[in-house]
Image (cartoon, rainbow, N blue to C red; front, top):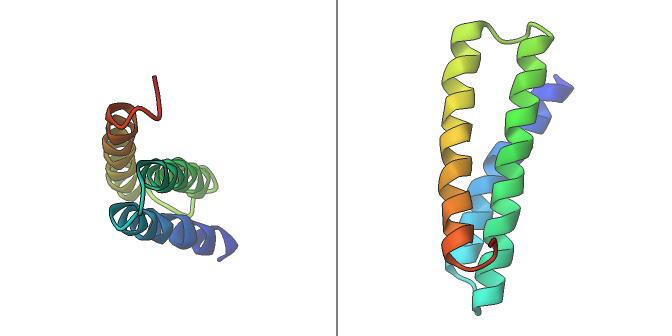
Length: 87
């Protein structure tokens, strides 16, 4: 239960940070919030791997959800790179 709660927290945090980035008052604010969203996507990926390793998730469920987080991470990384946050 604790692991799924952590996954829920980090997974929903991605969207809220992206929304805050869109409403940011400066480029630095935008980049900071996108950076947090990226880190939360990485954290969600960790919790998914842990749930799979401890056999709370079957392979099919893990593969599907994990692939989604990998894609989200790639998109967020690309946004950070184009915003100049990552070189």
